[in-house]
Image 1 (tube, helix red, strand yellow):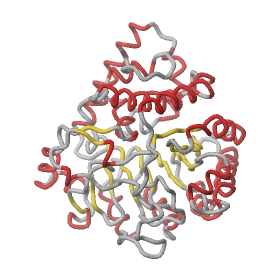
Image 2 (cartoon, helix red, strand yellow):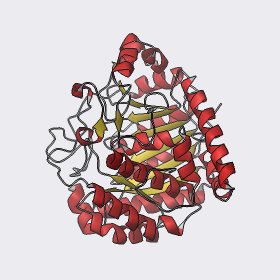
Image 3 (cartoon, rainbow, N blue to C red):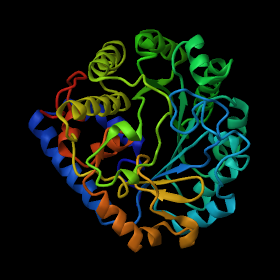
Image 4 (cartoon, helix red, strand yellow):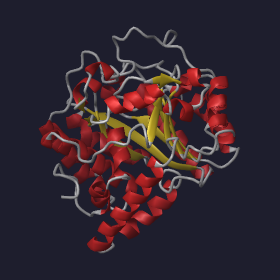
Length: 405
């Protein structure tokens, strides 16, 4: 059975405006009950219902803030870490069939995989995945369209897309290291929005995402206006690093090393507060019934608050239980901030078998107290913690105080 939220985002989006206007006492009761239900479901499952696949480390851009393919990394588009084949992924989806409610496909740049259409087909037809979120830099719109043509004509699956927009054209192209990348990203968003209009019910969210650092903080008003003109949803993250955003880890050698080299323009706490105020005023406050924006608000407010108070806004973290990371070579990690603890090919591409191994149990024991300000981990926590759900259901503006306080 599909996860009530991950497998039915469209239902959740329709219900959200109704929930927001319920009496506070009823919303608090609902938050408690929903969190308890979802946490019990997740902890009783031997297989995470959300899986993030890093299909490749290769990328055709060199973004200055990226922890995978920044300019001075040795990897090139032609030379990178070994990658699992589509045959491996077929095995994986056979063993995980019907157990993944939401599949996130990222990289590197997924469209650099010539077999991306085949992997998407396997996820749907063999793995019976309910929802696929595909993340792309948007540099190859026609290649992405070819990957989607078969999928849109095949079995029903809910599709969501995220394309990076760092700011206005001049900044984006300089930050991404490739002239014309902004124009291509815009073309990709326009293509996806057109496909959504021609395939109603198949494509749900089309999102432009801006990673905020000190370099583009002052450009936020212009960037928000640009994305609004395109007609896409707009997501925001804070540029992150495993070296700066992970706390209470018993052994620093467990960190993944996912950090942009020679990048010093991370946001400070006051910068985060400024970004939150700008986005709230220019975007979130204009769409109070939008679940996507409310979720983004809770995530970023939670990150800012965690840094301010020196403790997580919600504990324990369910990364590795509600979500799992699979790297291009089949390495499996609890989250992006931590090193892999096992390899799928050594376990017959059987994720459940790997998670039941002694190596996995020992890794989870060693990382049981760590917490981070990585937006994916904070976002995952919302479903399982009443405090964050109450903040999601609230009608308050973005703030850096404790969610639910």
